[in-house]
Image (tube, rainbow, N blue to C red; front, side, top):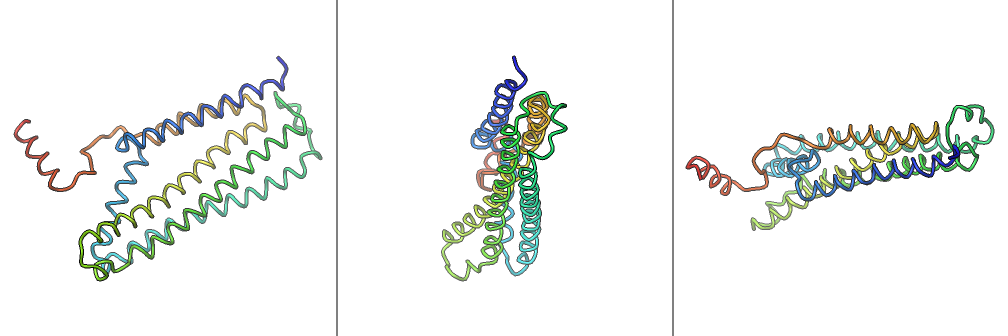
Length: 243
């Protein structure tokens, strides 16, 4: 087997591990949200929005400041992504000028191979930038909606619940896009190591998946937070009676 053939085997295998893990994580978030950090945070954000909108005169400033902190975090990641994209573009233009370090790379060292590597990293950073921009968009909308006087607009309780759920979904979407932007940064790390050969890239994919597993999955189970107070009181009574 030639050195350049390793790129055709190890690189797709490493990417398959990363994609397979995130597909499994998505399935787990959909089916067992209480066992994942993303699912638990989503449920708790919905409760937080409901608590903030109970009394906007008291909690309005706190809610806007919290969302502003999230906007600043997304802005920082978006600025970092576009800056790194510009840096990678400069490296792509000078890839043919200096190739003295290619003797230390065990893999494909052709000019086309380096262009593909840099272009893959560039795509990751551009995707991270777009995801974080969408996160800023949703957080900006939520900062206005969370202070809307919905109790004065309609006396019906049904409309209040719909408004609270809509704002909670808006906040959760902003958080989802922020998480996707962060995942794009994670994907860029193995692609960056691909510059030094397919073997470091393949090993980094396995190490990154193991680290993400312990960051994404929680082993602390509690009562289901999606039930209302009446159902929770019934469950509590049944537990006391030993049912």
